[in-house]
Structures are given as structure tokens and as C-alpha cells.
Image 1: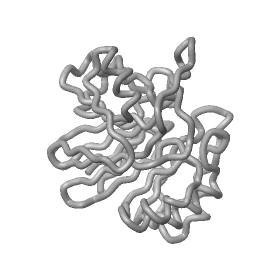
Image 2 (image 1 turned 30 degrees about the vertical axis):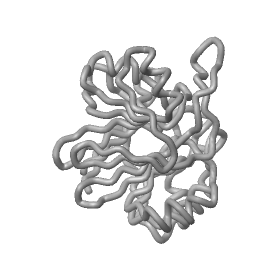
Image 3 (image 1 turned 180 degrees about the horizontal axis):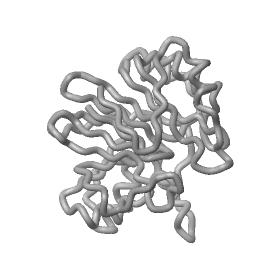
Length: 229
């Protein structure tokens, strides 16, 4: 599996069979992402919640990729379907499988609205995703979240991800200290910080996070850097 950070919480994951999965495609308005919409050709997009910096450019990307499937919560899926997007709505604990990847939605502690609309509307419960690849490699993308006990008792003890992608930016999500606690509860082999340094309000030093996570190997990719597992 190949993983590429596109900045903020946007990640591109490619399975061994070439299935391309894009998570939280915040591209055009993302000041640290150099890509254009036309550069992206995902098979699947996963949306964790409705905020603009995660919902991102999903509608525009879907127009350029007619076979694209979007996986998200039920409320966002209905919104997208009304916009002509092929979206499947699932909820906590549910999973769908495509070729060599199983995608499961798990909990996140956050808010979720369509904050880019003039009349801000409820966008369902925020979520996280556990992606299990055909070699049983498990990747957990936490979405926007604070620390909560099921990171230990459900995500860590039941699902046991090999890779945990955790927000560290503070203000809207966990800070470095809480994210390090989350890593100690989840106990992945590898942990990747996200949702930081996109804007001045969430400026953080990921090396400080690394110092607080002694039992997992911290990977700190540059934007557009790929890592193979």
C-alpha cells in the first residue's frame, strides 16, 4: 500500500491492486497543496464530516471521475446524491468492501455542519475510517476529533490498526499532548500527524509530538511525499 499526504487531513492511499482512495479531499483552497482537481483520479473518496476543509472538492472531483464512489455518513451521502454524486451512506461500525480494501466507519468526537453553505446545516455525525487492505494492513484515519475512551477500548483493543493518522493542530482537534495519549491507547506500529500547519491558527511542531510517542514509530511526511508499507 502507498500513502501520500496532500496536506491538512487529505490523504491518497493506493492499494496493491491499484485502487485509489482519497480521504477528505481539501485541495483547491488548501494553501499547502499544489495539486489541481484535474490531477486527481480516485476510485473512492471518504469524507469524515461536513466542514469545508474536509468535504473539500468532492463534488468537483466527482464530475471529472464519473465512476467515482463516495463513502461518508448518511446525511452527507443524501446531500451529495442530490448534487448528482454517487455516494453511499454508512454509520459507525458499518463497513463496505471494494476489491482489496474494506472501509469501516468509526467514531470521532467533533462537530459536523455544511459550514460553506449560506444557511449552515447539520451534516450528520463526524466519523473516522479504518481501511483494511488485502494483506491485513490496517490504516486508521481519525478525522477531526478530540480524545475519547473508545480510542483505547474499541479502536485500539478491537481493531488494532497498524497505522494511525491523528490530528495534532489544537483549536479544532486534539493538541499534541492529547494526540500522544491517543497514540499510546491505539498502539499502532506507525503514527502520522495531520491537521497542522495548514493555517497559522493550527501551527504545531510535529517533532514535539514525536518526542511524546516513544512506543510507535512517528512518520512525518512532507506534503506530496509518498510512503510505502
